[in-house]
Image (cartoon, rainbow over all chains, first blue to last red; front, side, top):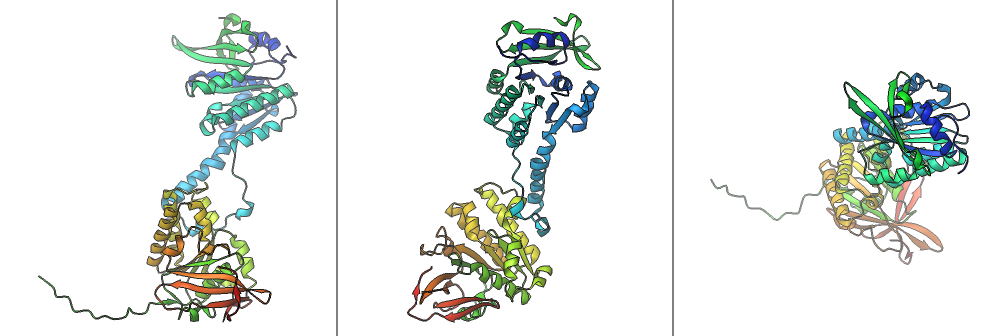
Length: 254
Length: 259
């Protein structure tokens, strides 16, 4: 076994203490959850445990940047240690917005004014490539980091599976090189089993968050489904929802 | 009730209105100009003067009060305008007044979302409608597409190129446009277009080429086909001068190289 991971994993004290010694220094985690289980909150809680030595990079695909920042602060994170890459906004600006414009022009017919004052074609920027965008960003990370992609669902929606796997593989490789911690969020019951299976195979840590109705409330449970080379660490835990995010339920054990 | 049809006499068709190109010599070759509403293929190899002839055709038209539209695929409007500035016949005020409009077709592709390499039938229809909409909006009576070959590369299939040209031609004719479609052909090909179907659809073919004379390469022009008018089929030497194109009969004994 190589050097072990340091620092809090998820901000779930007892669980973190159990997992930290068994995870390699640089690791890739996969957080599976149905859409109603608030996996995004747990992912932000993970990011909020960033340190000055290992700041957080948070790729968001659905939320506004301000919402991520606000939740990050509420979870006790230091905004100075967080960099948000809003892939949803970028995708809208570079892909969806031009598509809307194309639809508008196609619908009402092209006019000369649509072509006036346009940037000469010779200096037009290259088309937006989401895969390259993420990979170049990850390649630019040179120090230990704590990285979240929230979520892979969006990538699987707009990219082919091999491209998403490449992003995950490169992220893992970068994490291993720099001793970084990464968490990829994947909502279950959306994708083909093959996609989640391949991602789980690649991950060093697989977590599953769920929410089940329990009387008038929902009870959140976290299952540790896989810790690479440590089957003895598979377990489940009940979580409480607190103003500071998720915490382990009474006793920390089911 | 049966209406008696008056007896018809066999008369020659009335002469068609002409689009006087304004290019020195070419109108004489065409016995007065291109029949209005025609779609003409302007074929030739690289450097034979296709773009210059097209632009002079438009500038002369704009000067005469006929609005003109240049659809450029290969060169940007900025570069074209710079190149045009070298000719005395070019007037910037025609651009400013909107009498001469230059449109970058790649820009049009982008605005219409035609970003992939091969256009579908639906997209070809969209492109055709959009070109006709621009012609209608600008009120253009002279149109140049430079080049049909480049557009053809994105249409690819012969039957689709045929449909594109037929639909475009009919639309432009209805709008009263006289159109030049630039066709890029290698001098060794001995044909007028990339796919070979284009020359069958158009009303006319003007071929530009090169000929050697005592070690010099001359540009030559020949009207191969022009429906609706008689015309000379002789080869003419075409000279690009600052004041525009000049034509002179090509003396026999010169060996043609192009077209």
